[in-house]
Length: 112
Image 1: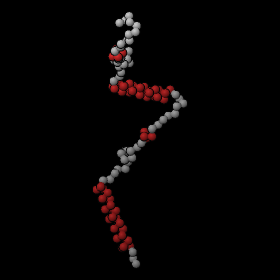
Image 2: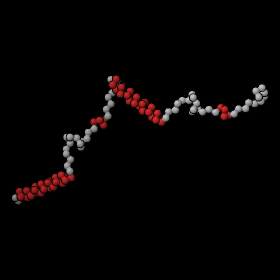
Image 3: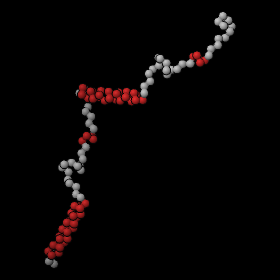
Image 4: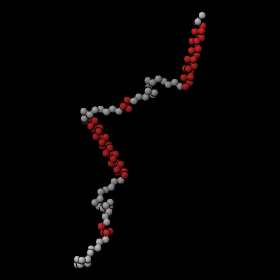
């Protein structure tokens, strides 16, 4: 077979098949958890870098979030006490009685 030059070379195509994923020189594939962890580590490193430059760079402007200065005007210690429904009803009744007394007083004070 090897000595006959005119005879064609017969080759099986399966001989050249190659697994690009399981070969010894293939790059290691990372799992989904490893990829998430790597992304988290890179994000943490970027935040730490920003924080470090905040302290080290004196020309960098101070950035303040406006939400830091938010106040709750309803639950603060100096807020007016909110009245209950019963208190509002009583106040309205007292004001109505005062208005009736004023009308009665003006009726007696008119001497026409």
